[in-house]
Length: 426
Image (cartoon, rainbow, N blue to C red; front, side, top):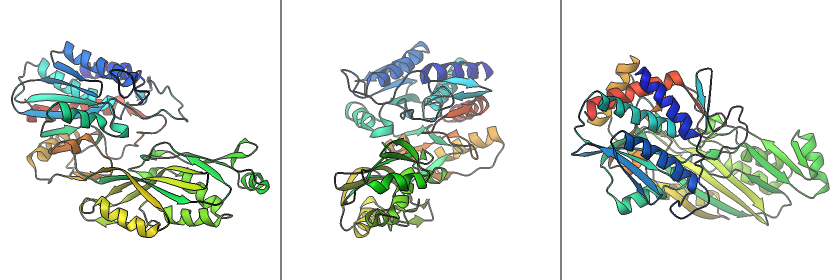
């Protein structure tokens, strides 16, 4: 597989070099021209391998080979904004056997690894026993409109995988709920943190014209931006793993809550990465605890608006969680922005068993399926699970500065996909 790993590495660098952050819509590119450029690069590559390919109006695309029952391999080519704090080139470079760049792990690199695994099997002269369809979304990070469009114009395979999460195999994905809580605010502070609910904000800008404000900020050791603007710093992380970050928005609310009762009340109710302060600290045996992330905070013009990302246990509903929040925030207006229902496939399901066997064969482990808070395209399938690429114990850098993957781990993922597809698809 060494030759394929070299090709995979080159392809990752080429694809990561394309800025496919969602941008201004254009004709034929509803999520910006960068996303379509990434799609066309991948479709061109797969066409050269003998796949049929199709661009579905710039929303998404597919490449397929084989006949018979369809099997989907779903991933995305859009990426999160680069943001600040990078020490390596966010558009791709290799340093000491590690590939850096936005999309290396989420999700350009993993989709390419799955592609090269199938190519290796085809190059051996094997014939697919199923119709293998790779589906490339372009709006996964901010709404899944790509999948909505796909379902409007094409037929989704019932069974498949999404290489957009973790190994060994994920048979359970928590529900996802994004909502905004808007409350009246009569104080004199302005705050702004975050741009997306699914990221732990690493900065919160605070400003005010009051005489005491600057003194308080300086005494608190905050970074000064200008005379009346200061920065509270934290650590970014994915909202599904908020314990890996340090939420700058919540830190700012707690800090300034010391001299502002309204902010103190809000901070108390937003405190806790498991929803303790908000009264939604739910848990179940199947999938574990709810996670709670304040992704966006805006305090201005007499209002405090908080956009929250929650990953909730599979035995609960979004409606139940909203009803609990209404009790915690009786004075607020709550607007639901996005709901993705949980996913659960029994660990004894043949698909799960086959994928797990491939992982255990390559790694020499005796691993079991796991639950995640992340949401993958596996939810778009009637019978699907997420499968790789991150390994247990590895440091997750998706959605963060210096997103990266070692060439060695990519090689191992490539081998696992090869073994899994050989059993399931050939």
